Image 1: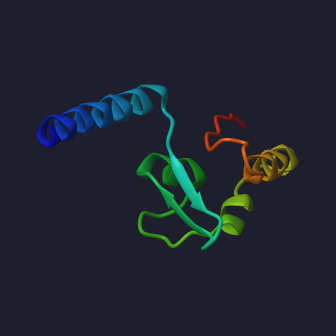
Image 2 (image 1 turned 60 degrees about the vertical axis):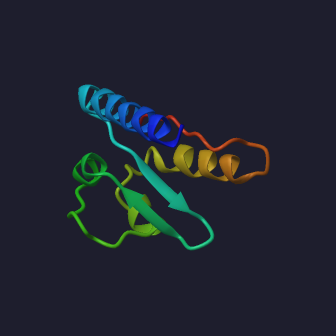
Image 3 (image 1 turned 135 degrees about the horizontal axis):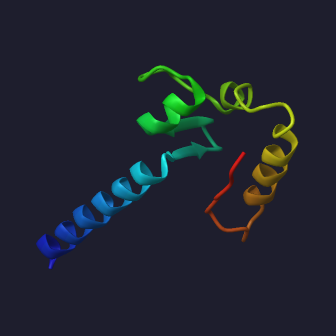
Length: 92
């Protein structure tokens, strides 16, 4: 069962990579308790960061267009509320 689950996970991850590549999109994660962010290579390129660069939320916010920042920050506060879910899909 474990081998099958690992194979299913690999297939799922590959499908996700293909979808993101086709869409020209990327993925990032933020850990609010440590302010650590993890970005895939596409998101780093979109925001103009170098691979391996240590990123915090503030450095990310600085790269968002000022007109989009209030919407971004409002959604960020929204998703931090208990029960708000953990997915965010937005376009700026």
